Image: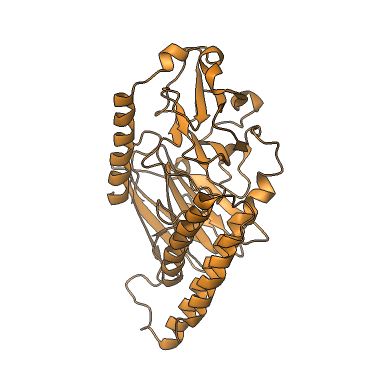
Length: 388
């Protein structure tokens, strides 16, 4: 059967999910199988989109195809490329907080993180008065402004468009073409090509699952629980970004307070992730906050409260039944390197102690009606983003 290799990969992937070491209860297992469904969808799409001579951008991950502790504030695109060809990327800058580009020498695997061969944000682009830009990636030395050399091994071009204010910011437009094939067309499909794509889809699926089950072991789980690292260049991620990472484990009677300075960086965001190393439900629950979304205290700090129970606070980060999970801050479009003073302070307290441990507790309180408005705004903003 043509699809047999992929069917076998799905069966193997189901076993990878069932044997995951972090599974403790039925919710963990159910979320794992839902994660698998998104991986199946993404793997088929990515295998069919593998076209380096007539390239186009595809959405790498999203609300229903999650992987790699996906950032709820980001829209991810990528295109496969060759290191010996020239590509033209053009478009119109939107109003999002950040637009960045990264060239990788391969994809993530269970044994290594791909090297970042180039990374920059739109401050290095020439953008006209209408917001339009064009940039070229190709072999050989740079040929003037707007040309970036592809290092040997360049294989994937990743684009991130990152929101800080979900309600007001809007995506731009972006497209890619290979300079010497534009206007042409790839050859017709053959049975060999279709067969190969099913096999590739199966390999992508298994690699995604195994990689991002191993990834936290490299960068997270060796850290003490309920702590976060100092800000650092993101391991395996965008080199123009700093992050602070950690993992938590809390009971229903505990809360974790994160206190961080309001950054001058255009983008500062926090998120929670499940033990599958993907974002938890950020559409229908407040499991992430940016500087624009969070309430600021009068002393210039943002205080977030992680808890399973509702504390009635504007900056409540909902655990949604996840007693264990990952947590991460990101800062992007930086103009300087960050230090420990820019990072978060962490304190675990009894849930009932929150009024005493939060210096601006009364100002941070929020009622049920206002909370529903906040969630409704998240739902609407994600709907607009997915259509835009």
